[in-house]
Every structure is written in C-alpha cells, then in structure tokens.
Amino acid sequence: MSDFVTIFEMGPRDGLQNEKLFVPTVRKIELVDRLTACGFRKIEVTSFVSPRWVPQMADAQEVMEGIYRHPAVSYGVLTPNVKGYTAARNASADEVAIFGSASEGFSRKNINCSVAESIERFKPLLDKASHDGVPVRGYVSCVVECPYDGPTPPEKVAEVARTLYDLGCYEISLGDTIGAATPETTAAMLDAVLDVLPAEKLAGHFHDTGGRALENIEVSLEKGLRTFDSAIGGLGGCPYAPGAKGNVATEAVVDLMTRKGLETGIKRDLLGEVAEFARSLRSVEA
Ligand code: HMG
Ligand code: MG
Image (cartoon, rainbow, N blue to C red; front, top):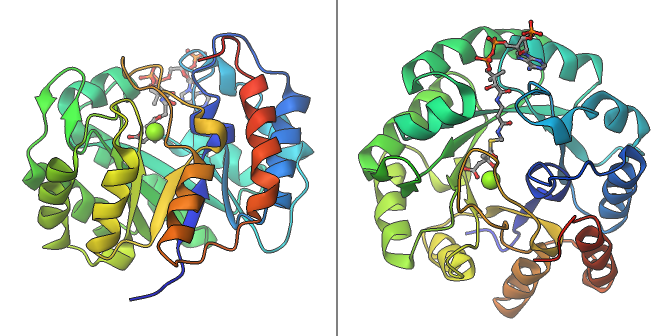
C-alpha cells in the first residue's frame, strides 16, 4: 500500500460556496495562489454552476483567468451539465467534476433532478470530456446520510459510484455531505463500495459537522484509500444541505498523515497562515 496520500484542496470551492456575503474575486484568486505555494497538486478552484443557484461562484471565469497556474498542479472545477463543462473548457480547467448523489432527496434539492436523470445529464458531458482528453472526477454525495431522506443504504452508494466510474470518471469521491458519518457507518459504506471498485479509484470527502471526520479518514486509510478532500481552515458547507458545516480542515488532515508516517508533499509550515487568511474570508466567524 502506498505511503503517499493525495490531498485534494477544496477550500476555494466547497469552502467558500456557502458564504452569504460575496467574497471579492481578488481574494479568491489570492487564496488559490497561496494554496498553490503550499504544494498542493490538486485544487478545486470554483464551480461552473447556475449563478442563481450558487451566487458565490458567479465569478468562476474571472477566478480561473486570474489565478497563477503552476504546471504541476491540476486546477479543477465543478460542472453539473454540458453548459458548465463548455465554460470550464473555455477557462482551460485541468479537470472537471460531476456531482451526483446516492439519495434522491439531495439530488432534487441540489441539482433539480432525480439520480437517474442526473446520470443521463452527465453522459454527454463525459463524452465531450473524453473527446477533449479532460479528466472527470465523480462525486457521490450523502454516502451515509441525507438531510432529506435519512440514512443511505451502502448498496446504493456502491451502485452510483460504479455507474459514474463505468461512464468514465477517473476517481470517485465519496461525500459525507452533512458530516454525519461515524467510523462504523463509514466502514459499512466503504465495504459495499470496495466490492465494486478498488481503493485506488476512491477518495474520501468528509465534512466535520459531527466532529468525527478524522476518525472516518483513519478508517478509510485502513481500507486502503489514499486520496482525501479537505478545506483549508475547515471552511465549508453546501447551500442545499442543511447541517453541512465545514469540510475537515486540511491542516488537521496533514497532521494526521504525518503522525501516521504518510507523505503528503504539503509544506506544513505555510498552512497556518493560509488557514488564517481563509477564515478571514468568512462573513461570520464560526
Ligand atoms: P435548473 O434550474 O434545473 O437548470 O438547474 P436549467 O437547465 O433549467 O437552467 C436554468 C437556468 O440556469 C438557465 O438560465 C440556464 O442557462 C442556467 P436562464 O435561461 O433561466 O437564464 N444554467 C447555467 N448557468 C451557468 N452555468 C451552468 C448552468 N446550467 C444551467 N452550468 C442546475 C440545474 C444543475 C444548473 C442547478 O441546479 C445548479 O447549478 N446546481 C448547483 C448546485 C451546487 O453547486 N451545489 C453545491 C455543490 S455540490 C456539493 O457541495 C457536494 C460536494 O461537495 C460533495 C459532498 O460534500 O457530498 C461536491
Ligand atoms: Mg462537500
């Protein structure tokens, strides 16, 4: 098993998308540039979604135009449909991410369609990305619990994850969208997904509402996962998932990996002040 762990930094996107007051575009650009300097190799920069649904991400194009592009970094963006993909491509995103759900309630609230309809909507996007050679990451949200439907059956997570993988996603990020997972529910969910996909194709995406994200990451490490999503300063939330507080903080994840003797390639000494800067972008201190 590899002793290198990839951290996919979510701060500029999942971290900021829920902020009530608009964060100035120059501040978003500064955050991405400072994260680049920390040594991340994967940064989710913004979302090409409907600005009516997520006003905070309305400056996606300007942010993409303004950031410094380190050649070793993959700058990714969220794209819910072909319209978003086309805009992301015009902005030269290095990779894009589609986001589906293992629960019907969240799918409807977040992307305004059923799980099955979302898969149909993703297909033309995946075809275009494959033609263009753009890697596509797939999110599955609500992998243990949905704010609308309650507990999610692990088999449903496995089914959606496998479907997105079969359609061409290079990696499936498993989202505990509302931070309700425990080590036990995480293990049960992963066991089901690992029956259909190998650990190296999976990533863990834990929100920390219940304060157990680090334990859930430890369980995921034991199951062989080596990619984790996190947000600098623990920023975060999803406007369509009540109770989804911050993502697990990147600095805490890096420290966990260090304690476990795992490499991340991140310059830990720089994270503290970038986390402080990231938290200063919040409209209200959590
Ligand atoms: P809809 O209203 O059903 O879409 O929304 P529509 O196709 O009927 O279009 C309605 C309007 O939106 C039209 O504009 C479209 O042009 C426009 P109008 O003609 O009325 O002026 N539109 C767009 N504009 C810009 N970019 C686009 C786009 N698409 C349509 N890509 C839609 C459906 C998917 C667009 C909408 O529901 C949406 O944008 N949802 C995004 C929600 C979101 O971003 N949520 C947060 C991210 S997910 C998350 O945080 C979870 C995650 O972190 C993992 C985890 O934690 O589990 C990833
Ligand atoms: Mg999230």
